Length: 170
Image 1 (spheres, rainbow, N blue to C red):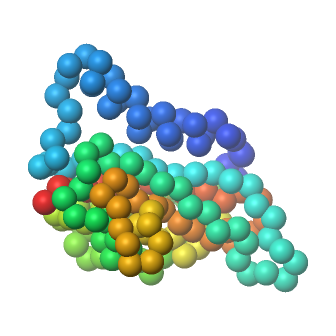
Image 2: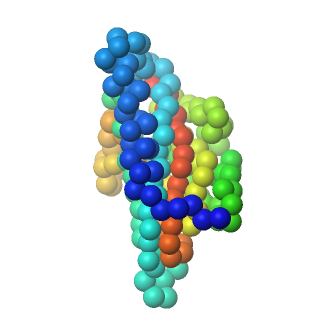
């Protein structure tokens, strides 16, 4: 069963990442320390049309923000993806990636990361290939404030990734 297309899904992903931080700030509750591990959600859901004769369609990318600036810039070489624990939601195609790191040993239920590395764990996804993690700054640059998740659509119609991530401040 294909997942229905919904702009609301994208909104929920964004709100889920922002509301807990905003609520903690308003209530005076403890916020994530820049010396600990932080977690979040990232994903997107898009409809695509492949060009005639094309193997890959649209190139999608979504970004995530860290609650505190990282000590070092997050470059393409420190953002990784695991699709090992992907779950088929019904008639879906497992996402593919070559952007893995053996140090990303967490799970979707317990995302972990070694110090200074972002580990993204894909839970759901369909019609997505070449799933990769990147810096939000092109080239050799990097950003202390967030990262990007990118993938290619492989069929006409719905293409999505749902994932959790972890980053441990050094």
